[in-house]
Length: 249
Image (tube, rainbow, N blue to C red):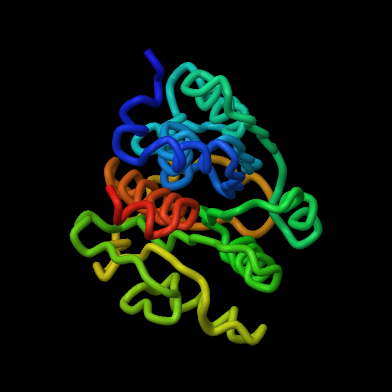
């Protein structure tokens, strides 16, 4: 039996052929990014570049798909790539264990992807990616904050310029406006106020890795980053297949 037969029943052979030829680059392989990659791989996307400098840590076990006791200490990009190959051996998957900043972005975005997914936590890296993609004319789907939230019914999809009640989105908008970017970036965000009141136990704070300052840990529940990641993947797939393909199913 062909592993993709159920997808073909829904979307049709032509759509699956389009996905096999599609190229998606995913930046950030944590709670959101890991589930986005899962959905893209199982949908049959043929070329995936997976970018993350970090390794799997104990605090990732409550929400990140690639985080298992058996993968602790391993690079997230390598663990993700192995899982993708196990799902779809025909996928050309390219793991990149590297930092994301203005110097590395040009290389990471070549060859040119059809869609870019931003699932980065760092504000500086997030804005740099969004700015680079926008100025290069690359379609990008960005995930705003999922931490500190529990109500998935408050999640929305829309242009960054239309976001509200999301502090992360507000900071991103402010930074992008400095570069003349006010609209044209699609994102998943929440209308739910974040609950970040409880201080983290110092014993539970993992060593900071990579550039930039260490950030205060934010509480998360298992399902919220996963739902955001799946919504991000849906938007990417809709872009790859176009609304016409979906409306015919």
